[in-house]
Length: 476
Image 1 (cartoon, helix red, strand yellow):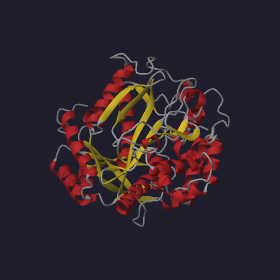
Image 2 (cartoon, rainbow, N blue to C red):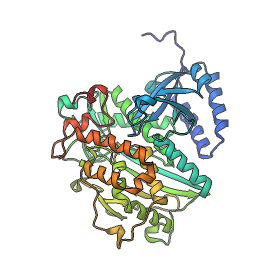
Image 3 (cartoon, rainbow, N blue to C red):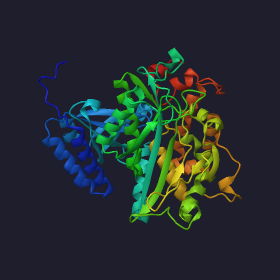
Image 4 (cartoon, rainbow, N blue to C red):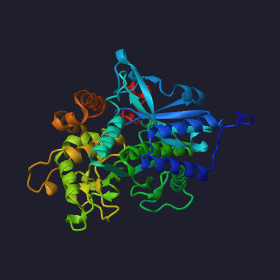
């Protein structure tokens, strides 16, 4: 269709980067939300080239959902946006379906027109229950509340940086067609750090990195990973809520760029057996008044007593949290010790098979790295459970807790059982949300073979929470 008579906003990547970094700085400085709302509404009202605002939210499993609102409608009705919660897996029952979307104006992004469409902006939404309170099944709301409480009570800023690996496969919708094809086709077989300029993987990484840069991610490095057609595009840390939002945007950008190039970006933890799987190493730290509380130049591995207690709580609850950090049938293929799997419930500065690692750091970068996280886990649930556990969980009275001979489960059934039985997960999520989450995982597991075996089964892809749709779910 001709665009000759259209006049929608299209900004250069340089302009977008400047605007998104300014918005990011406002979040860092905790500018009053009312002031930010006023600024964003003025921008939308004054810029006639903006036609729509894409509001993003995530379901209980972490699948990203998007609604486009006409700009004029949104400006006049942003405080009364309703949607059918019963259509979202893990949200309300059909008999009590109405939920609201609140706009988190601080989480506003100016979007590249060639990726998201001309005249569009993005903003993250907050799911609100009928009583006007944050909806209990919205993990983003749980994380936002925890972050706010820790800052107001203790002056803590919760920081996170995530290293998200993925695969690039030939063809559009390669995951949704896997039950027909039974295979994924690599687009590159170069391996770690090795991809020639101009090959499909390198082109994909370059374009994705440019989009991230324009959206204020502040990139650090990008490269092919160990397995064929595998990639990782790293960017700087942020406060926990912004970091989780950026994980969702990262995956969305990757998928959109790949589709435009005739390929599929996949975040299945282990889409191909026999090669390394994909992880989402989660680096966390806590600062107060600009000081990194995890740093101690005289401490063991140069991290503080607070950091070690944080680690001990994570290790104590390692099996309790496993289902939240490894959220799919396919995720348990990745916990195979033959492929650098972080499946040992211990902490180490050097052993990459440890669930928790203490990277080399300094006053600014000292942190704790939780390595067992899969890239398909709900990022809000991951950061909420890691920080809540690290700050408030129990520490087991076990000798050599940090080097104990304990392992994470190698199948989702054991992980579900551990999750259901744990008192701590009830304290984390509440009994209702905990039960709903476990039931969702049980439903996917029950549609897949109990034993993983050596071949990726169509069902573990088809019924994966990031892949399924109503049509695929009905083919059982």
